[in-house]
Image (cartoon, rainbow, N blue to C red; front, side):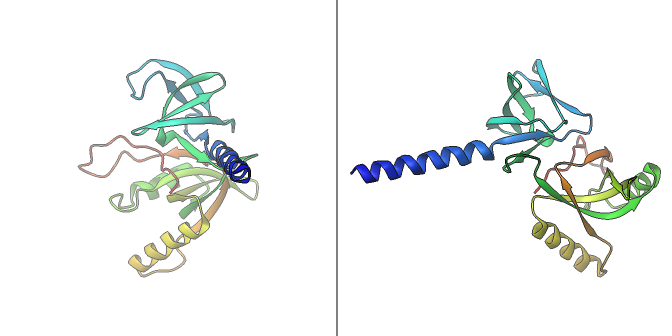
Length: 197
């Protein structure tokens, strides 16, 4: 009986420890912050701001599309489109973006996005660096694993019957999104940053 209680206590401690590690979230808004609200809706009072500086918040719970967080002494709600869950302790989680264009100028990247059929790709422009220079990458998807990104590329290339037009960009944490198109014709939605899958 004592061995069973000790074993159960150990398992419970490990589960609680794993749960607390898995419940860190980071802001991924291209504005540099996301508002923390008093309730799970965009009309409620703003009680704080969560920054994109790499500081983490503790995820307390979820209500629909809203995450309840505790961040630097403030407890409230942030929309799930502006945070990424990071189960890796000690730093930002690696993300894998599916890229189908890289440009030296923002204008060129934006033009590709605006000329891409958004009813199936939904591309967005993210700012990065290559060889010490700023580049603008047109990304179609963001994934938690390289295998998931590779699978998406395989599907795209099979559909388009072309190879080598998509590649993977690996980042430490969310990349800076600098352009989100308003949506394709007839769509009545608010554009949001792609969330990792």
